[in-house]
Amino acid sequence: PASIRNEETLVPIRFLLQLPSEVQAGDYIILTGPPGYDFAETPTDVGRFALWRNCLSFIDETRGVLTPPTCRDRQVRFIQEERILVNEALKATTELFFTSAALYPALSVSAVENTFQVEHLRYLGEEVELVASRTQAAPPIAPRLKTPVID
Image (cartoon, rainbow, N blue to C red; front, side):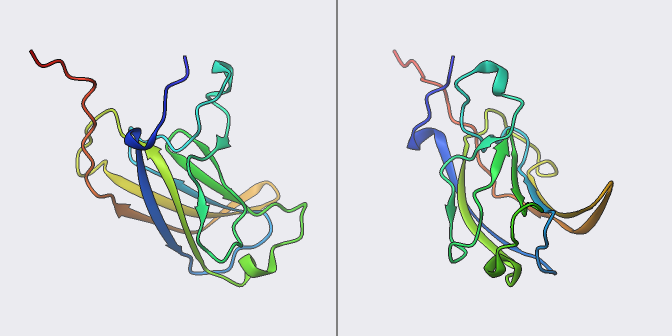
């Protein structure tokens, strides 16, 4: 069964990714959240859980230059497709500013695990080049209680 998602079950998160170099055709920007986060919309078919899907509550705050990312579990993925013209405004920026949401984590994680990782990858045919990466501590978020019964 699909889970019900409303404002009380979502954690809104604002991201500012400052890249050391411009985005080129074929580049991927992949953000991975802490264990327990889920940025992806619930699929209507259970067989689609492993696929990349729309992200929850995505808002581009980078002057409208971002192509909406796709999400899977705790990952957010931006792709600058090779088969389309590189967006000149995106090519000229090294900052990606956006808001998305994740489900409240269902588990507590240690301070070591409570991090976001960002990777800027460049696909060159069969080769993959890591252009840049960074790991950043996440603010602590406690899991929500399920409906408590109080007598």
